[in-house]
Image 1 (tube, rainbow, N blue to C red):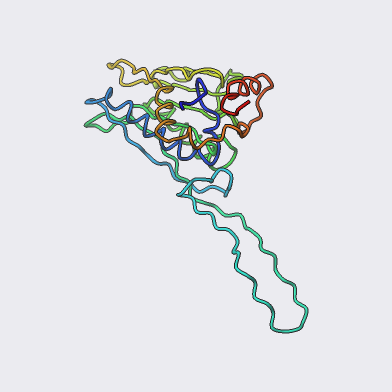
Image 2: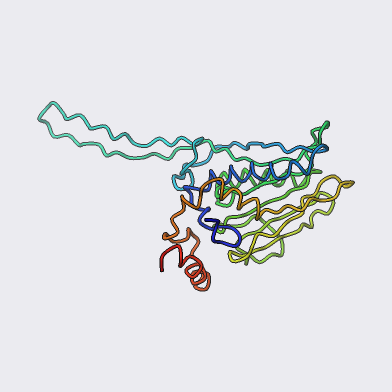
Length: 259
């Protein structure tokens, strides 16, 4: 069964699915672009690493982040008859290493970074070290000669800073060309809409490449067997839907839910 949603599937935003989906999508974008970029360009998969406060909800499914929990071993009984206070098992806040992947379109031969492609993660959008690390990286790119493509397929939390834009869309793609900054192209789309194609800027003497992210995402959905892994009887993950969107989803999934 293909994805029942015309655009982004909000169930892929579940913490238990997102990290793997994010990794698959990064690789799928690279694979889709490569045939059209060769022989002048290649796509490199890079990794950003930082330490962040433990968040068990966001770290579900992340094998690189090892979270230590309190031991469940039985507590030894005291050998004396004196009254003793048994300690409670508690959990202390710890930092974990987080690795986030992104893409760089580079020129063959010079290895110059022409375009940076970022697919935002929940930690990029939530207040904390993850957002701070990403915003610093974003500013470095915006201050460089490289283009930036920023893909936000997450409804929850605060979008990246934009001037003069009302936060009305569920999802967004930003294309920032080094030659036209601070102006950039914003592709806004809602839960009910297909993901729009966006333009991938390259060097000035090469035409921009139209990227069909919708087709790429549907391929990831199919290859990742998400049609068997998602329980569509469960509610859509946060944030809460409007009454109109909830009714639309209920009608969309009525056959799957058996009602």
